[in-house]
Each structure stands twice: as structure tokens, then as C-alpha cells.
Image (cartoon, rainbow, N blue to C red; front, side):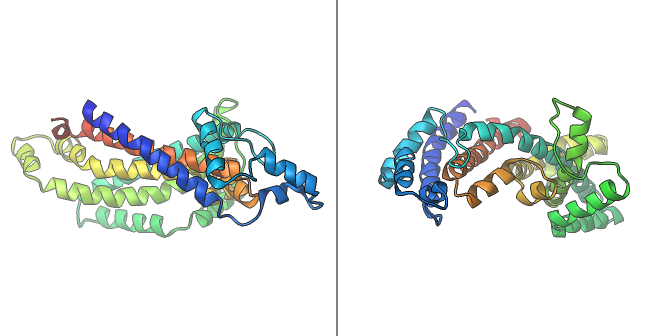
Length: 313
């Protein structure tokens, strides 16, 4: 396992280097001139020249990349062109919000998706199987923004049980924080639960027909032990991979859901940065997102060794 970990870490560095070049290069393709936008309507030539020099916009592309990547390696993602605030500070402000939302959504997705997938596989071709598939199809087909609006109309407007929008930090008021995040978390978790359910069902159906499962049953083990300890544990590998990727997607920012519920997370940050041509913020957020994806994939690979003893040899 240690040699495998070293090997994977050896591939992460060149991958991140390539990703950084790609992020910086594609960023330059965005239309518009940041210096002209920042200079305002008057666009005084002296101001434009000052801005170009300050943000190295008058330098060749490779030189600008070296300035940027040099700062990144020192923990400096640059400053926002719009509000003159360090990008790292902006990310650290928004990241806890998105992490909380993504974590709650993932818990909901795992509980619903894996449970429904197990029941659907064990009770194949039963009423419960058909019901789980119908619910999964509904989850895949329902647009997040529509479901979010419907939940607001029901639980906020009609019943008055939950706040319609906004965000409260759990460090300020845990109960209010959970109340403000439960609806957007369910909206996001609902779609992921549907995908997890289908993959769990497929993986479980394959494992339940394996020889070692039949052997476990022949030994007289309780069906619950056979399903949860022998079958599910060996069916978790594709589920872990999918869960890691979906969690990375959530951390990158659920734009529509955050807009519907007015949540100040990563999604709103990246959208505002793109519209404002705030290059430094876009680069910083995309780099953090890419790093998160790579890290989650590494953690998923390591989790394989925990759930499947055959891989440890």
C-alpha cells in the first residue's frame, strides 16, 4: 500500500502542473481586457498603463504564468482585480459554506442511495425494487432549480417551517444553520442519491451471485450478515469512486442551487468572477477545484484497500 501511495503521489505533481498551465492558458481566451474594465468608463491612458504594469498584463504570456505559479507555490493566489482582496481570503471565506452544503448533501445521498440500492438488489423484481427504480428515475429527471423552488413554496411559504434563503454559520447558531441548509442539501443529495442507487443496485446484483456469497449462505449465516458484510463490502468499490467524484462536483459549487437559496458559496463566487473578468479569482477557484478532485480520487483509491482485503496483497 505504501509503494502504491508513493506512486500515486508521484503522478499528482505533474498532473497539477499540467492543470495549472491549462487553467492559465484557457483563462486568457476570455473576451475583454481586464485593464480597460478596471479603468472604468473614462479609461484614462495613464490609469490603464498603471493597471497593466501592476498586474503584469503587459508581459508575455509565459512570463505572466511564471509570476502566477510562483505566487501559487508560496500560497499566494493573487489579488482580486475587482475588490483588491487576496483570492485566498475569498476562497477561505466561501469554502466552509460549500463544504457544509456538500457534506450534508453527500450524507443524504449516501443514506438514501445506498439503502435503496441494497433493498432493490436484495428484493429484485419486487414492489420495492420497482418503487426504488421509479424514485431513482424521478431524482435523475427533476431539475434542481425546480425542486428547490417547490421546496421553498411548501416548507417556507406555505408551512413556514424553514427559512426560504440565506446562510447562517454553524458556529453562530447550529440549529439555524441546519435549518437554512437542509433544503438545498436535499436538492443536491436527491440527484446524487438516484445515481448512487442505480450503481449500488447493479454492483450488488453482481456480487450476490458470486460464489463466496453462496458459500456464506451455505454456512448458515444470517442473511443480514451475508448482505452487509460479504456482499456490500465487495460492491463498494464503484460506489466509492462515484461518491468521490460527486463530492468533488459538489465542492466545485452548485451554481443553480446556491442561486435559488441565496447561499454565498463557491458557485456564486466563480459566477461573479467570470462576469466581472476577475481573472485571479477564476484561476484560484478552478485550481482549488482541480486539486480537490485529484485529492478525492487519491482518497478513493486508498479507501479501496480498506473495504477490499484482496487488494492489500
